[in-house]
Image 1 (cartoon, rainbow, N blue to C red):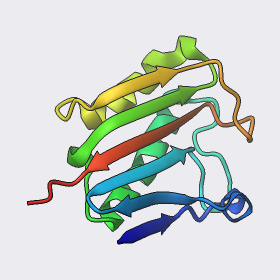
Image 2 (tube, helix red, strand yellow):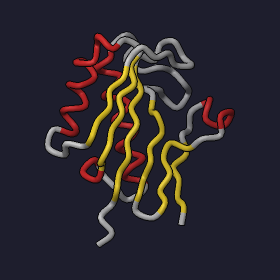
Image 3 (cartoon, rainbow, N blue to C red):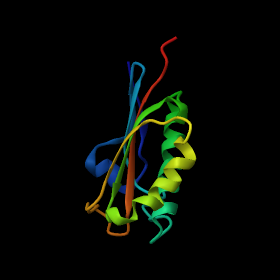
Length: 129
């Protein structure tokens, strides 16, 4: 059985993707930018604020599919400027300090909207019991 959460961003329909997809007990959350539903980029210039905004969107998607941050087993932090990793890490740590998922953090990337400084992806596995 496949369930999904719509991305509800202007570019999602063009690209043909969902915010999150659940198949069985696995949930994959797409690269999540700090964007409002109208496409406005939140917390301009602020990596930590953008990371918090992306994580808030991810939390909502997980909840819609019956999961929480406690179910996350992997995160990916994608940055424009890797030298600002600690800013993203602070926001990530607020959410995942006790969960301790596997993590990859990468920088030197460019996103489709130049105001986006960070995107976050997660994978969650819901306990089948």
